[in-house]
Length: 320
Ligand code: ACO
Image 1 (cartoon, rainbow, N blue to C red):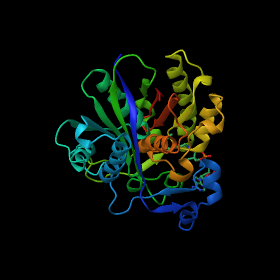
Image 2 (spheres, rainbow, N blue to C red):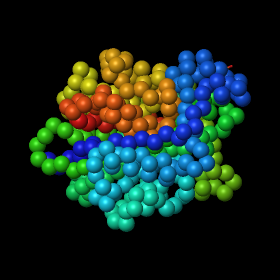
Image 3 (tube, rainbow, N blue to C red):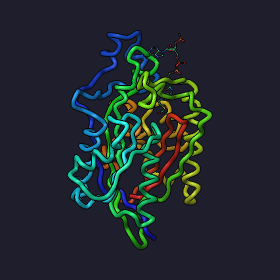
């Protein structure tokens, strides 16, 4: 059957690194508190020349280079972002132009921290339906621009960056490819994690607000259900999973899911310690790292999961 293979991987992180100590110098917080509650030690923060578009384009170029595919062969681009530079054109269409493309199409997806799983699901469906052969799936976020830097409860948690994956269509039998994706949302939990404005409201583009403890509780429960759902869909068990590549919100949430899967820590790809939470960019950034350093290899079964504002959540399973 027709399916999509993940063949290219790229990431971009801004040069500027902000350590916990640097935050502690201007806020009532400490390196110990942040490490103990989140596992985060530092984050990359966008400079004046970084934007959702520039970071997405950089990550995409690296993914194309990795795959040995020319930009001219890309049929479509999906960018998952909650922090676009403009209301429109979509980030993906700007990226299309940055890559020198004039054909195909692009659009953005807004699903907060679940954005990459939503984008992957949409891209996989476009491949399976025969509409595209090659499609870039990108997460690019500049949360530093929607964070209330005086709120110690949220500002310590996030970082900026972009990650990209290139999907290509394959026909015929074969174990490799995206096995399935599973999406969920529940708008009644929208007030647990949200941005209190947008371009549609003239008074303010808004800042991120969060009820951290409630989000934490939902995250562990919903992500556990999500990993069960995707494995059950294929008659697989925890023991079949080679790698967990989770959304990187918080080390305690990641460890909670890994424990549930009975996966040892060495089978879990973690970047939250160095990247903090880069929202929709976190899964492709983590995957890029683990593919390039040789941890994820051909034949491996890779499980992805994410939860974010909405609440939105979901999972995806791929055989490399
Ligand atoms: N430094 C020092 N103290 C702090 C800080 C800080 N940066 N932030 C909060 N505190 C204080 C609080 O004010 C509170 O003090 P009080 O008891 O005097 O009122 C105390 O620490 C405990 O606060 P809680 O919010 O209850 O702390 P908790 O143990 O829940 O940890 C955290 C907070 C890390 C945010 C946790 O709730 C969490 O990880 N939640 C998940 C949120 C998340 O990851 N969101 C990301 C987006 S969603 C996603 O991607 C899954």
